[in-house]
Amino acid sequence: MSYDIAIIGAGVVGSLIARKMSKYDIKIALVEKCNDVAMGTSKANSAIVHAGFDAMPGSLKAELNVRGTKLMGYLCDELSVPFKNIGSLVIAFSEEEMETLQELYDRGMENNVPGMKIIGQDRLHELEPNVSKRALGALWAKTASIVCPYELTLAAAEVAVLNGVDLYRNFAVNDIAFENEIFTIKAKNGKEIEAKYVINAAGIYSDYIASLIGDNSIEIVARKGEYLLMDKSLGGVVNHVIFQCPTKMGKGVLVTPTVDGNILTGPSAKDIEGKDDITTTTDELDMVRKYTSYSIPNVKLNAVITSFAGLRAHSTKGDFIIEPSKVNPHFINVAGIESPGLSAAPAIAEYVQDIMLDVCGRLPKKVKWHRTRPEPVRFRELSTVERRELIENDPAFGQIVCRCETVTEGEIIAACHGPIPAVDMDGVKRRTRAGMGRCQSGFCGPKVAEIIARERGKDLLEVTKFGDNSNIVVGKTK
Image 1 (cartoon, rainbow, N blue to C red):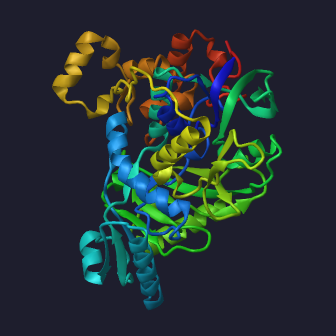
Image 2: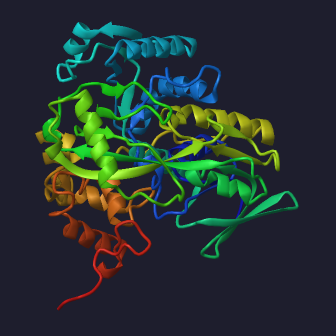
């Protein structure tokens, strides 16, 4: 197949770029090496929309963070994605750290961050009674928010697909050739596509993708962060995003509510040699527990329901790299998108759109462009009357499959037939929350697998957790 633009990487940045560019009357491909969208950093991060005071003034991180945060609430409303503006608090435990708060405040003012204030001990404990009594004060940033990053990614990709973008899953790019003004992009499985322009949004692999055209100017280090997710019974322990003072490795261990009512804490920060290690370790998780207790002493760490790790695409240049390659101006690098990458993602999409219009020239707009997607049913959020009406129209919504999260068979069926159908267990999980509760699929897992097999026309033996060789059932016993 031949395209005008090929976007490599269906994380939050690649998917939002695909949505933004889908308004133009051109052919676009979105290629992803995994079995689904949002399978890299976009599914395993802190889910924070940062205010923008941390990035160095004058950097792309600073500019696009503040712009992206301003856009995020409107975007999530448009795409029916969970979002809450709850504000953040960076807490200080010493006079030296109080000076650091002033530095962050001054930096934020230079970055044009609105709604900041340095508060003392009394006001801090009014806002957050469970914060350590040793805390002397905090930087309060009212524009910070929380979002569901994988739902945002999925929603953006769905809008792109509804507007004609072709999504290629399991397309692990391993070769790119350029001849006669056309890129030929090849995958490990033998598939290939052609495109006039390429947008490299491949996350931690963006340096490798750039190297395929001879561009060795990018160096990405995978920085692993490990997290603990706690049960909803801890809801209300904190009401803001709670940060400690940042270090050279990042913003430190945070404690935050999630949009779904859990409590999330982490991440650790450790640079690793490879780019595939998302295992969790006792030492790193113990460190997360230690620093969590440092901020919130009475948090019940025995309420952890799962742990996970994510990899951040840390650029050795220290800033986002968003520009045409010096090797080939038709190849646009969107690399080093680490924190505040999620916050900046809507603005990054705008920024890349402007680059493409500059590189391509004027592009014709579609007569009809779908800005949004059909809003998914979230049975757990419906009133009794709404539930009754839904069940009367489709009895499958009367069958609760995941009791922890109140997810119905109707929702799982819909996920299997959406604009970007769920094809595995984790795909259903991210679209519906089936398996994200206290039992972590212990009860609903077998039923979800059966529904996937039935709706996707597969044998149960073919159903996987996340593609590759992650089969749920490996054989028959009788």
